[in-house]
Image (cartoon, rainbow, N blue to C red; front, top):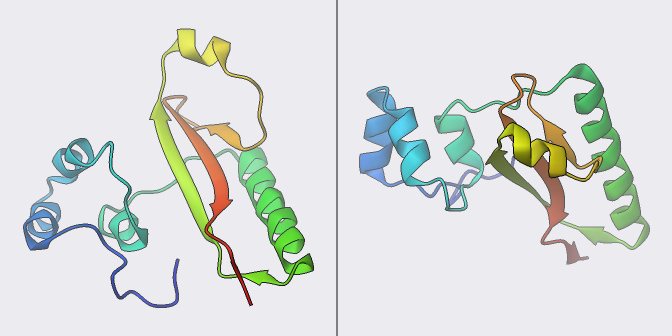
Length: 120
């Protein structure tokens, strides 16, 4: 999450009203091919369903990435997260990648990457 919440949402007032009225799934469907921002995830009460092992791997990967960036005096990076609903057939084709994790309910793939880093 960013330190500032200014301009950290893609939702307009009408979408925020829909969320307040319990229509999160409609918003998720409407924005499924859009890039959401930090506060959108908070507003939708979204959470990652990761096993303890995958959560620890994620923390380790982010730590390694930040150490790498720090070594080059790079700061202000963003974490890019993708969600992909998958079928069993797709799951069999997926290359084992430590940055791709299955949700604990086995319905979603998550990909975590660092992007948009800037120099001091």
